[in-house]
Amino acid sequence: MNFSSKLILSFVTISSLGFLGSAASAQTRWAHRHPRQREVLAREHHQIARINAERREGEITGAQARALRSSDRAIAAQDHADARANGGYITKAEQHQLNAEENAQSKTIGQ
Image 1: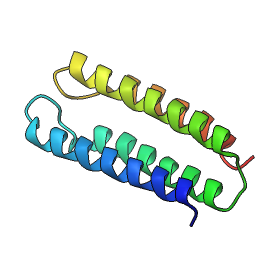
Image 2 (image 1 turned 180 degrees about the horizontal axis):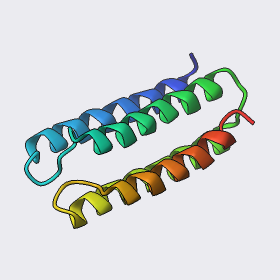
Image 3 (image 1 turned 90 degrees about the vertical axis):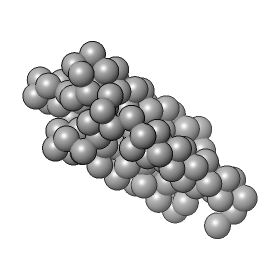
Image 4 (image 1 turned 120 degrees about the vertical axis):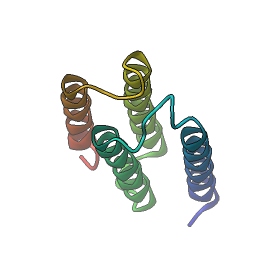
């Protein structure tokens, strides 16, 4: 594993830990354990792992990996905004929209 891969992996790990810690402390404001919320977040984490694997294997460039991660962060930000607007949960319609966005991004990984 080269230095940039280690750096990216470290950043993703630290970001994930910070996110989990803040979500756990704000459980009343944001219900991250709600089934719809959990599904969307699990897909997000899985796609980040896929992006990192594709980058490690040399199937995508660093710039492509950064763009994909940025897109994934935008989807996650939308998820958080939707949850904040609905008292900590996302609606079924929002879940379907977020899943459609994840599906579209998933198709671009590894092409």
